Image (cartoon, rainbow, N blue to C red):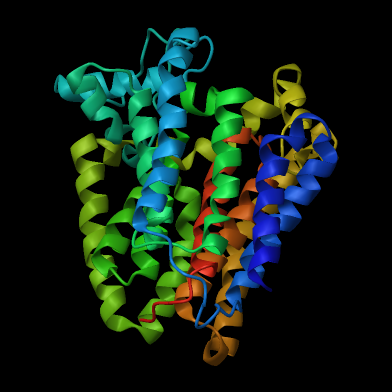
Length: 396
């Protein structure tokens, strides 16, 4: 697949998620999933261009584009934060996280029930998701500035290959990034005003960056942070870990040691190790809550992305079960395919491509497809796009 076709796929994917879904929800869901799968699957066998003849533009051009993207977000953010104050009646995620951070700073247990929210709310967030907000609570500034900072660092990591200069063709990869930022500031700012998802994006992008740049210890740490923010990553991580153990022992053991240390440290420091039953029960509690509140959730399911809208509401439990099986089976199938074709596939590309395919399948099959959840997959498409437009590839 050539570069321009991949660029069009990513643009269409982003456009479907952020714009089209508000007008043709059903069609947007199908197009979004197909484009995401095509992006991931095509990148497995993607052959990067060689001996590019275009003249590189000075690195200042890359800096100016990235700065413009970040300034667009930050310049509107203050007004957005005033318009949408932190209020658990609107969205309880960040207020819960804020309470957990304040408790941690004051030497209290972050995971005890919060009586001030909904008359008694059990915190359910893993430490990789809430602990990054501790500096905001410690210095007493709005937690959402941490989200914006996470997005800025994510963009920097995605486009880090261009910091030494880029050519005209490579500059086209900024188009979907501009579409994402424009949608946030002009269509729906809830992604940065109500959610903690930019933190998840940062961990996934940092994990992908460290993997493809051959930094095993960083890969281990960021894998731990990704897992301790969204533990749905586990099946893919087991698959890529098995391949690394089989073919790249040195990388594997370095990553495992650093990842294990990071995981145990976060679990014990945050006291999350004493609440494993809460985390393990989230899936079933999630399904029960949705099944018993049709009036609350049906409209959100029908207007969002994902395939849940195509099923009868009473059949969502079947979709939930199917999603679990797909989450287990798809990484196994991808891993087996790699072993059968490993002489023709670069592990670096396969790792990121398989992660993309896994995320597309997982998020499109969840029963409550909140739009903000899909940003992680879209940002990973940006990462793949930049790599595809770069001729030099890394090998372990």
